[in-house]
Length: 70
Image (cartoon, rainbow, N blue to C red):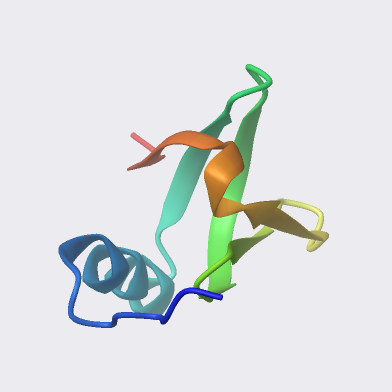
């Protein structure tokens, strides 16, 4: 298991999204697009809360990109 390095810029940016309750888009390798707010992250996954308050756990390796919702 990899260590969770909170000093990495990507980790810090996601933590800012969580703190600010910023809505984001997650594009997956399956070409699915998920929209919601990130509840938490760990070294393997992020948990996205959608518009229906349904949490979805997404493996980091399945993410193509993550960006704020414009």
